[in-house]
Length: 75
Image (cartoon, rainbow, N blue to C red; front, side, top):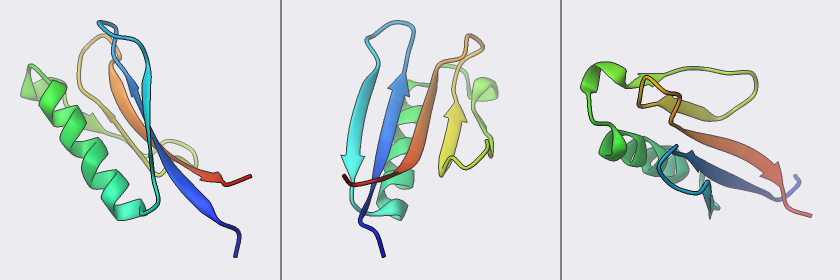
């Protein structure tokens, strides 16, 4: 089994894009969900979607701010 990491990508129009790297998939998802809900100003804007082969994706504003978790092979 190849070693993998789970990369959380935080895209917010009010800040530079940021990333966090986690070794555990479930913990990365919990962290990403917490970040998205923390940054969300209006609960009706929060939406989780399954996109392609992404592990997790949540948008939290009407302008496309989002948090995504990707599975990446460690090189």
